[in-house]
Amino acid sequence: MKNISVIGAGTMGNGIAHLFAQNGFLVTLIDVSSEQLEKAIQTISKNFDRQIAKGNATEEQKKEALSNITIQTILEEGVKNADLVVEAASENIEIKLKIFETLSNFTKEDTILASNTSSISITKIAAVTKCPENVIGMHFMNPVPVMKLVEVINGKTTKKEITEKVVELSKQLGKIPCVVNDYPGFIANRILMPMINEAIYSLHEGVAGVQEIDTIMKLGMAHPMGPLQLADLIGQDVCLSILNVLHDGFGNPKYAPCPLLVKMVAEGKLGAKTGEGFYIYKPGSKELVVNTTLLN
Image 1 (cartoon, rainbow, N blue to C red):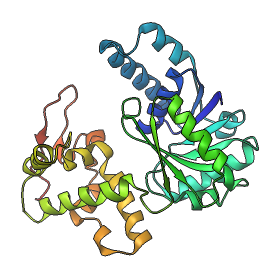
Image 2: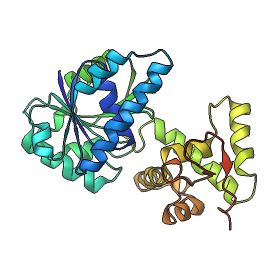
Image 3: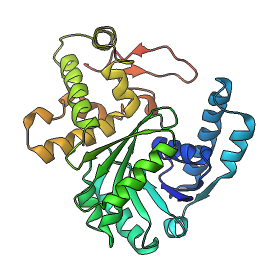
Image 4: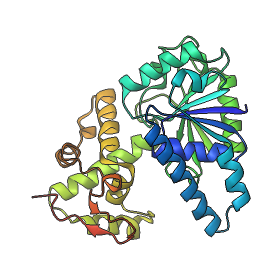
């Protein structure tokens, strides 16, 4: 595999493009918005600058990686030569099904079609394609260039050879692949999201404040950040979407999203990306300021 197409130029998409490009792959980054694509390239460049400042990359490596990335707004053009397509669009089943149905008509017969979905059924996604045996999940973690895990998800029809190729590819990228089967939320989010949801319920019910909840989990459970800060990093809209998949998929009330989370999404308080979540985020500041308006 040499030619990689990445669909979606948001946080995950630009991180995945960064990762492949710095490992010598030719990457086509695809998005309907040319503005979003330009923003993604700027983000990749800034992230490389951080790596350089820490001694983890050189200016030459940055230049070479950026030269490996081509941007494209037309999906059909962007995937026609791909050996692997990694879809990193919004966590929305309708959007993903439409993308994969299109991919099936414009990619090579042996192209591996991977989704970065964090919860949606790979089997369901594969069912709209002409070669469901070539469809698999590659769930990268945020920030992609830093986090070591790739959750590799087998659909019901995924060929063993495809899984083996994706596992080997993940290792080439310097990641540690863990293979799981296709159930709602897989492993990462089946365990993580109920914890985050319970933390939000604890705040909603007045058991403790934002800072107290996060501090208890950091100091008591050795988590690098608290669940509410992590929810802000992931995005409340993404957390809500995953919890809805878990709730619908298992039919168990324990996965029902907390009303406070639903309210935050409705109000556009989505976390770090909107500047307001459980904390307030100011450009250029690393200080965590608790949002005191959430329970009003």
